[in-house]
Structure formats: C-alpha cells, structure tokens
Amino acid sequence: MAENKNRVRRIVLDVLKPRDPPIYELASQLAECRGVRDVSITVAEIDQSTESIKVSIEGGGVNIEDVKECLERYGASIHSVDEVKVTRSETEA
Image 1 (cartoon, rainbow, N blue to C red):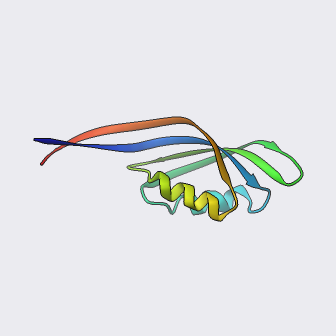
Image 2 (cartoon, rainbow, N blue to C red):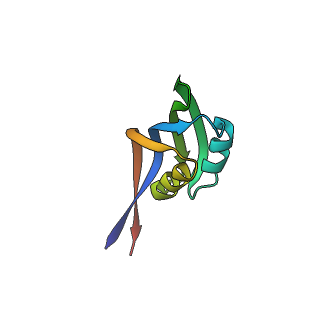
Image 3 (cartoon, one colour):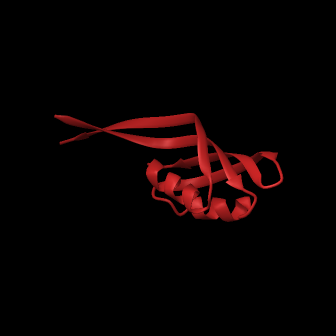
C-alpha cells in the first residue's frame, strides 16, 4: 500500500513586521528553518514603525510551523498565505 507524503515546496506570505530587524536579517533566519532552501523578501509598504513585506520561501519540504515561529520571534505576523505549492510523492509502505 502506498503512503502519500505531501510536501510544501513554495509558500508566499503577506507579513507585517516591525521596521527592525532589517529584511536581510529576517531572511537569513528564515533560511535556517527546516526544509527551507531559498528565501526572498520584498518590501510592499513602509510606515513609521512597521513594514508590509512579501516573503517567498522555497524548499524540499518547508515546515510552516517553524516559519511561523521564526517570524513571531522577530515580532512579525502573517496576514495571509497568498500562494502555496505542494508536491505529493508516493512511497511504498
């Protein structure tokens, strides 16, 4: 019997973060999360104390909970999941 194993390969998040830390520091920390290979951050809007950013994360099995915890450690919050790519692989049990 085959066991289905779905893996998140890409996720794009709309995130609100404080102005500090800078996006390069946040990207470096997100790259340390389980399953993450590439991180790209684009600033969408800046105001006096916050930044709205688009965070694109790719990998071989992105652990979304790890990503969420990392963002929260930096005072950021996810507004929405704007895109997700999941790949299913079948393995024999």
